[in-house]
Length: 531
Image (tube, rainbow, N blue to C red; front, side, top):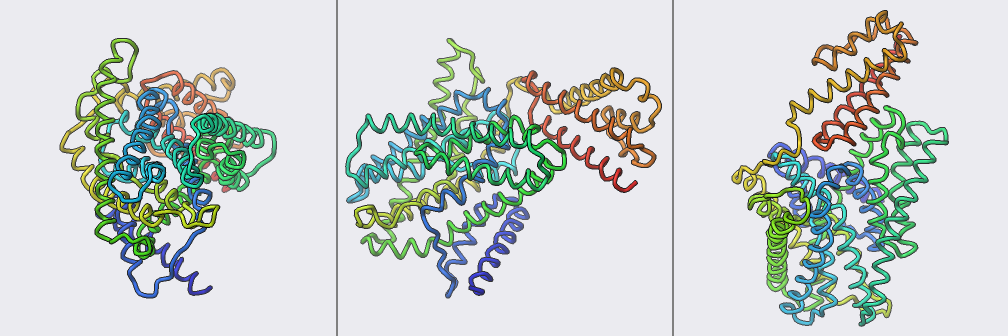
């Protein structure tokens, strides 16, 4: 037991070292983590890590999906809803369909149902991989929003395909009517349960006295509860987590009511997601030796398995490129009839979008969740080959596409020429001016007699006009601090309204200013305790 604990502790250190090295080399950390796991797996005497397949989804998916949903901007996603939904649902289905027929054609004994199992596993690109790669290169906001939004919903669509395909493999039949009804319930039930539970969590925070620790723990419990409840009634747990996360993200200042809860909660979630992502990508490499041992039992040579993996990867890349350029054609046609997000998308955007199909966390979790045996006691057919092909797809797309994507973006010199957003300088000036006016207006209406008396107010207001030294905490009375808290809350309200009503403001800038207000409030509270 002690030896295993030391081993797991060493793996955490491997994760940290690999990510530090990745940051030093300016490459995406999932690439190095997979390679590190692969190298560690070949060390003699390394314990074999086995996880109950049924627990894979419950352990990893809910927090990762919830964290991604909480971080994404619903406002930006709504602008690009057509292309996001087409990539998240239509493209995923076409990809799974293409993989199913390709696998059925090139792999001996591979049924069409097994092809859909494989297609459901490897059809969704991974948000974590793309995000880690894109942080080293500047990418237009519209394109990053498409990638973020697509990754949230494509997991749900791919896992629905995966679930139906697993049933077809186990039973040997597929009833379209039953599948259509089940699909409708999985989607509507998943979304409904997610929003309902999110609303309950919101009301708990609103009406019950919670402290910072309770708020943080409840935020950790929420995604797991949404996922488990939805799955128990045979709805989509993924859609429950995504819809619930988006619901609470829009209402984060009601869900986490204090600046301390928001700041500490964000820190906890950042560390938690960091560790889970690291473990998952390390597991990808660690599992290779066990997967390779199983290939021999299925009568498949390593050369054949690698060939199958590379061919399926080529199919994935080709389908995504066709989908990306197809989206351009559809946009050029539909702009004559409806308002589209970009009237002239050009050829650079689909090139980049087509090359961002890195696979990762969800594909691994889905592959590992395949049971060793079916309900009738028979071994699941070609399980180790499916796992190996998934590994090859993840490894090739991460290394080949992941390492070359930044160079491709720089080479194309792609920039969003649409006047969809204000420039950063214009937006910053607008937000600072609006916050300052909101503060002065509030003080004038509610505390006109105190505004001129307190030196701290003048310093606070000047800081929104120009970046200067922090205002001193000394000499600020408790009544003055209370008024400052009110002013900060009024500025938050103004920022949220401006973000909602002004489509040309990038929500990332709004969130940055909201973060500054939370930090300002905490500085005031610390000063209050020290004085």
